[in-house]
Amino acid sequence: MSRTLPEINTLDDIRDILNDLPGPDDEAAKAAAAREPQLTKPEGSLGRLEELSKWLCTWQGTHPPRMKKPRCVVFAGNHGVTAQGVSAFPSEVTYQMVANFRSGGAAINQLCKTFDIELEVCEMALDVPTADFSKEPAMGDEECAEAMAFGMDMVDGKTDVLCLGEMGIGNTTSAAAICHALFGGAAGLWTGPGTGVEGEALGRKTAVVADSVLLHKPAMTDAIDVLRCLGGRELAAIAGAVIGARLLGVPVLLDGYVSTAAAAPLQVFAPGALDHCKVAHNSLEPGHIKLSESIDKRPLLDMGMRLGEASGAALAVGVLKAAAACHSGMATFAEAGVSGKSDHE
Image (cartoon, rainbow, N blue to C red):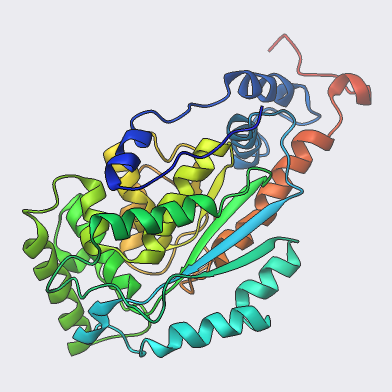
């Protein structure tokens, strides 16, 4: 049965959807759980690969799991808060990197080629940065809803797994502010070097995060308002894509710190909203470990990466392909004529 996406005009439409998300496919999960012990290996010997194959079935709504059509979407946006000197690079770099993506010269291009992943790059009004959230909300209600609706529309229901990534100078400041607002603690726990700021510049970035959360606290009545006040268009689009994927039965790989921070408001607003998502890798951005713990996600990989642009998510596609291949392709004990586990000690 084909599924369609609802029309989005305001953030209240988003709230309504989050309050009524579809759940897992229990039949597909049961089928995966029934097959796994029959495969020619000691139970549990493939570790997290076993968990991942079942997770794919559960959220794809099918057994065996599919991994022939992975897709990667990278959303790019510019942030007004860069006027506060929070980044080591100017906003022009966002334009330049988008051009690099389109010409095939970035890391994400090579990773997508390696793992046969379809890549789409989406520019989010790069010539109109979001408002400087150290002075006013980054987005209005309709602007944020529009960005989220755009992200939802970028989900293809035929996709086997969706990798979500971003490009946007200044967006680690946005991510840190979102995390600080959602989960508390000192602003410094969430604020890292991003593009390479250090020393006095890092102190300034941390102060911007702390002061901005205090500024908007009265207006942030829920986690969706946190995204509106402190996020960016590309972060809102990632959050929208996560929702669209849930509605269309597509599992999601979140990339690093920024992508995970973009999705976190959904989990805070509606616990369980990210059950169809995995955090692909542990970013070196210092707040990412704490963020993953805060939303109860254990990253699949730890490769010392902090690039963004969905690079970690694309790399993790290889792990998902391995999980699906083992679950689907291995012989059972009966098929291979291999004796199963003895009943006696």
